[in-house]
Amino acid sequence: MKNKQNKIVQAMRNIVNHILFNIFYRRRYDKIYFKQKEFNLFRSDSWSKVYKYSKINKMQGTNLECRFPVSPASRVVHPENIIFDPSDLHIFDGIGQYYQGIGKKTIGKGTWIASNVGIITSNHTLLDLEKHDAPKDIYIRENCWIGMNSLILPGVILGDNTIVGGGSVVTKSFTQGHVVIAGNPEKLLKNYECLSMVQLFKRI
Image (cartoon, rainbow, N blue to C red):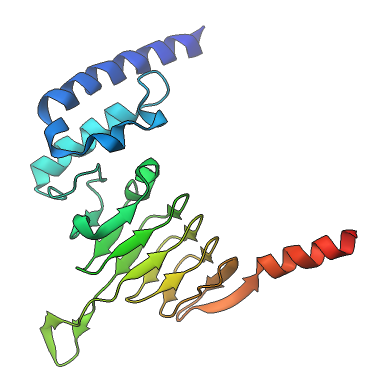
């Protein structure tokens, strides 16, 4: 009985925040991001969360150029250069995430990005720190997992199903995918596609 009451209360809260969001903030965002299943009024607290995020971002003056909801605890610079699937809004839902630079950042469908992750397409110029080097695009393919406190540096390409251990600094590409990498700088720890093939042959 109590669970049913909680669901009803949550649904009512969602409806109220859905109305408030549409009145005050909807014009800032592209409609495509709100056609996902998590924005069903009776399934989750997504409308409450996006209303809260929009309100705080406006008060702080942060992430105002974003055409999609972003946690006010994270920063997105040049959001027009980020390519991702509309169903993956959760990648902007963390704390301390930093998407930087004018280079293109492509994030494949099904990828998860933990808190305090930096994705950097351009570093400061060594001899003049007020300037930046030419940007290098970053490509993170599908179904990757970027662990907490990791840093992805300019020009990196990560293949499908790449796992980056927490606290890693990724300086080079692993285009083959299906790998576990970790460390500073990163090292290949495991190729789990090869491991799965070995296990398959053992069963034959």
